Image (tube, rainbow, N blue to C red):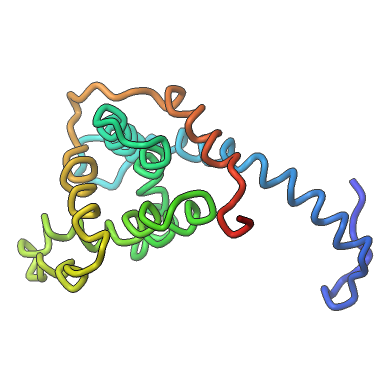
Length: 185
């Protein structure tokens, strides 16, 4: 594989950056495959839960699919907790940043804020404010995020729920990540 000539970016020339752009475009085209591979590896969970991280994602996405959500929202639901392993303190923002170039402002906002909204179900048991999400009460996507958490996220920890498979969602993931990123539109 051909490599650039520089050791510092400031010394790169047009040919170097054209080469890198070619490789980066090829890499970007395989984003969906890398995401699916990562999701498939999520076969463990934090201690205490009855299901794996993968199963939680599949359950949530299955519920969104069965509710007639858009492919974009189904895929976002599938990926909503993808940041749990690497960014446990800001997993929502991590997931949202992966989705951002490919989804609408609304979907991005829902995924970005779902972690805070989800504390509605647990914070009061741990001495926190279950209504912390209310600081966004006047935001145009507040209710949509409440609904996301209620219908898809908090409801998806059932070891007896029959989820669709990751393979069922693969074409949707491929389609969303094949879109021209919003920042190019």
